[in-house]
Length: 231
Image (cartoon, rainbow, N blue to C red):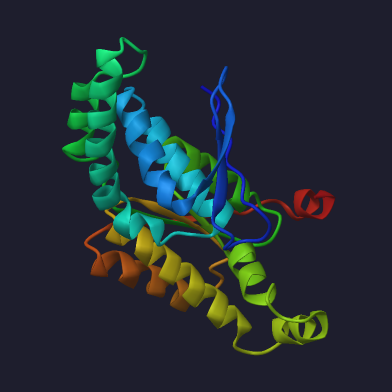
């Protein structure tokens, strides 16, 4: 299967798109993401289900999804089991009802973990963050996107001034931690992609992990000056 998730418009629009090879494209609101999650699990694609949720959260800037995903998805799985039973009477294709019932018993996903990836600009931290996110099926919270979400509702002139205000960076990091907290509350790992230039920022991320009983890992990216300049 090929997974493709897109946000509609700007971050926060809460629209996504899933495409399976040989199937049609579906534009999904957040309220149906739980159904996609359980459908994939019922088909034996638990890792793909986590990847779908992570891609949706990044594309729609909707990390609060993780606070309710398991509960709503269990309910959706039960409803889908009933629908599958009805389909079985008509000998239609699709997972057996028992597969949805197994999916309703609870999601199996990686344990909560905070991986913060930092370093100067153009040192490869975003590339590494994407790779780690894809490997774990974990959502990625990116500082640049959080900043964009803060500025998007503002008129151009106001947005240009807001970037240079002294507390703007603090607001970006606060927004990142809030999103990461939503993911951790859902029992999942999360990848943070930002500079983390000072120890205080790293300590805040570590404290967030500790509050959720999660391990904290910090990875620092660096590169030779000539490579940074070339990028």
